[in-house]
Length: 144
Image (cartoon, rainbow, N blue to C red):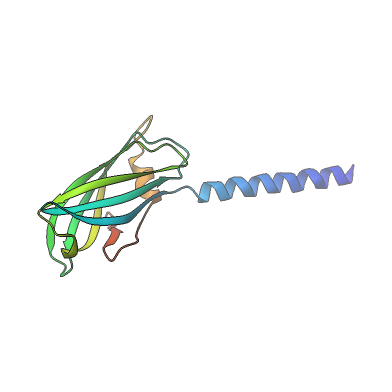
């Protein structure tokens, strides 16, 4: 009987640990993976990975474009495609009249939208991670 209790406790601890690890791993990742000259501008490619436990039908970010000399070049709203849970999607955005080589970093100002069955904007903001595979930085400015 005692070995059954110990076995049950071990199983319970294992399940609890797995659930805690899964909750900590939840994230919404945005990675800048490409910047290609296009016509009279720059085409930005971002990979979005949804590791949250819900499907996201709408994701929109307000992005500030900052030059290599730290001057403001403009801002855009990037509207991402629907991204199911545990999946990734690529999105391409064109920045008109901005050369790729002049961009120092993209600053995320805010989540304009992040929704599935309901508004998840706060959760998306809390769980968002930004990175770049390029010389162009991709960062999130904390909101006050």
